[in-house]
Length: 227
Image (cartoon, rainbow, N blue to C red):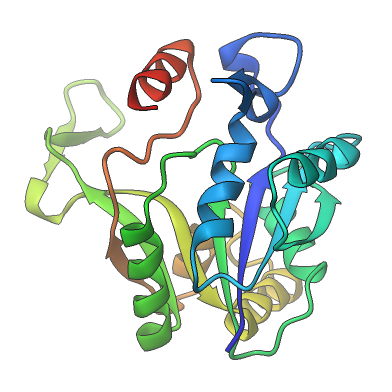
């Protein structure tokens, strides 16, 4: 069984400001993306890596790999117009058997730890699909047609999904084929939500609160502090 890490680095990072996509911003002397790639480079279970990046930044990704010893990188492809389409392009760029595992991870989550990666791999092997999640501390409510039509979700049943996520390659490609043939799951924003929309079995894996997604300037401060 081969395990491939798919790193999503196709966002523009408009909320964080700056002239370059946030995944290429330097923190502590190297790009954020380099930290993320290094996490998977060092993990003994990861066999190869594919990066899905902003169109036109492919050479930059290869340069980061060369500069930081990322020898597991096997492919770099330009992303699509959504996270879901980018994941599909990444999946099509790698050579895998149906029983192989693909781990999907945000390039701007550089603090992913080995325990989170281990958890999604183990759960994917057992269930065929696994999504990292962390329990919600606050109560979550949803609103109906009126502002006063407020309902709460029991906190003990509420989780926030993050990455990494892991899927058997065959199940992932099957989901994309169903999506294209039937249109079911058209509102999905990510491979995990697509799987749920299609009724595919997935399990929640234990994620880490420290595994933040760098989106706003305050997240950069947190990351620098953690480093």
